[in-house]
Length: 508
Image (spheres, rainbow, N blue to C red):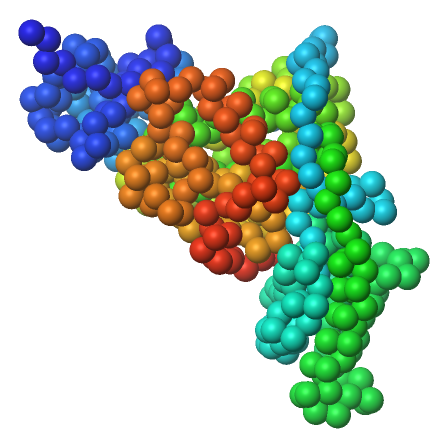
């Protein structure tokens, strides 16, 4: 009787496989690959399928993810302490394809119920967002928001919520520094997110460097602003009352919005991963990639992001570039981030967290190969910088840092109206501004965090569903969540994370 234990070998050229058994496997276990474990190996971690000499390639996904720091015997546990990173792909070698990639066949007949805005964009929520120009006023705004929820919102049943768009910028900053445009345009573009219905409301202090007029769009007669240092305001209560007075005008207009049937081409979906593990690139991220292809085929927009989690797989992207301009922008953003990390005395290896390593990811190359799977197989139509708004429908690379909150904030500024977040280690992350669907990479996490995760992608690893079936399942859930027919797990629990700006500019 064959007692060999199943493991997961991703590519025929791989010389490692992944332990699939929850809780890990003890030394002496024989795998279905023929390897016998030399030591205990944790769940999700790699086992050498052949002897690997010192300096030899450790191969997963058919790609070298690292070089062995010591001889590794067949059956050895292969972890981050045993390999070093290979050299990153050279940016100067990236070239546009001679022939532009073909678009995937169109997908018709799918819609969702959204809120149509005057500029043509569509919201999946109907929110009043209150921006601030400086952190100093955040406490006052949050107090006002509490009162708005208690006193005003019950009178406006079509408005989902009021959200304080707080941040740590505005005071003591070098407002004209080279990279100051990044946090400034991010704050401005967040206020223009389709889930806020074009209602821009800014609360300022008065002495800060970031002025409300730098946040508001010129000529927008619906935008309002106020300064707490205004001499006409006497005391805290007057400040709060003035915020409520302005909020009431915005709520009146927002309450007139109604959901209507919209094509999938009005969806702007941001895809992200955090707390990744060895299954991220096998289950959840490919599932997102399959769903991304369906959205793009239906005319919608998808963003994938996280520069340091694309950098080591960047050579895979130019063949999918819709134009030479896309490759040029991709190289420019990657080079900018390389220089940014170098200036800070860091490199791409700093991306991989202790949790990633505990989950079986030995380094950033392995993590990157799994991360890009979120992008699916559609042509890449554009590359945008941090804080920029989306320009084209289709698949876009949004060049953001990989930090969860920073990436989510920048995707929100780009115009995202629905967010999808994969995790293998687990995170309660949720944006208050956008529905956030969380996908567990493995069934162990999905069962343990049964009321925080929305989708169990671990069923792909077990063979219960295929990647394609998972993509369709996620696609249909996206339409239901976008339409307000059901809520995400985090929204049911009322979990909220702060927005976090990316500010590479100096603070004075």
